[in-house]
Length: 251
Image (tube, rainbow, N blue to C red; front, top):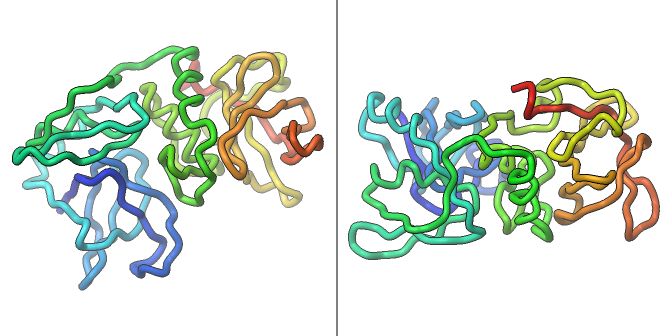
């Protein structure tokens, strides 16, 4: 059994319970496979990144067949507006958010008239996308301009611009080529940060001239050096640099 997100966003939870933590989100147009069903909850695997979690059965929308699913996964076109709308067959409006996959809207009889991208875009465009998320509040598991976490930011910015990377920072760090020094990096490269145990706990997107955009409290721009992130407001280092990865040229 397969499904499609036909709402602006749907929380994906760690367990099948309203009180369980949100570990990710489905955005409009996201596709998924159903792994398990119980009375009120559905365990799914998200097609884009193989992420697994539970969604409320009331928000489940089934795709007619596996053949339809296999055809739909070829249709990738991501909304470039912070917020826009699709119109249903009966003229109702559904709000959709930046990065929604409107490439599948025709299947669910929705129409869209807005800016979108369906191709691989360059580093400059990737940075332009990242800056659209500025001041979005930090939200664990979030993937939208109304709430996003650090790895959600990097994944969504890359996704919108035609690149596929995993959901979590600890997995994203396994992609691309290692760069030894910040001076070797380009805008759009990813910087990863670890804790005292050596675990990857944070990721941000490098900008020009030793700046970085990342989600920490909210999406903001700070300085970065070989030690880590230097918070311009707190005037101190807040994250310890582990490595920098060139994803774009090595994916």
